[in-house]
Image 1 (cartoon, rainbow, N blue to C red):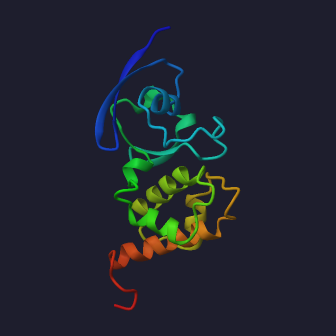
Image 2 (cartoon, rainbow, N blue to C red):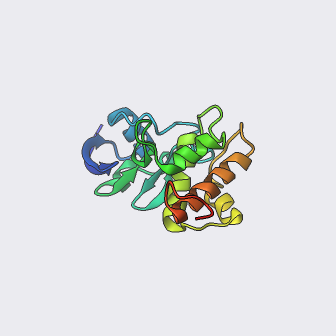
Length: 165
């Protein structure tokens, strides 16, 4: 089977992988680059568990060919923040109980991060639209929406500032 080299910047670090023409970005990230934080939920673009930010846009990695990512920047959950150095958005998810079983969390957080980068002050409708490609069976979305609202509010105030300041 013929393979093609791709160079992609994953979470700030350039990486090279050999992929087939029909290989998805999801498979390349997980199987070739050990980015296991990108979840394989459905492989059909229905659940959003595999959401990554590709060249500034949230995309389903299972619907994107790996060769389409050649030369581009990708952000996964680890690029948003880590357990040692979490992003305020991730802290907000924990504070609001928006993580539950955790399977959908990487995709939802990445979708929310892409939304907040594009629109730092989204309303509830825009938040719901921004995460509409992500399925969550545990939370009912209320905690997720509240976590994103709170993270947006903290982003406007700055982390550590009081709301009434």
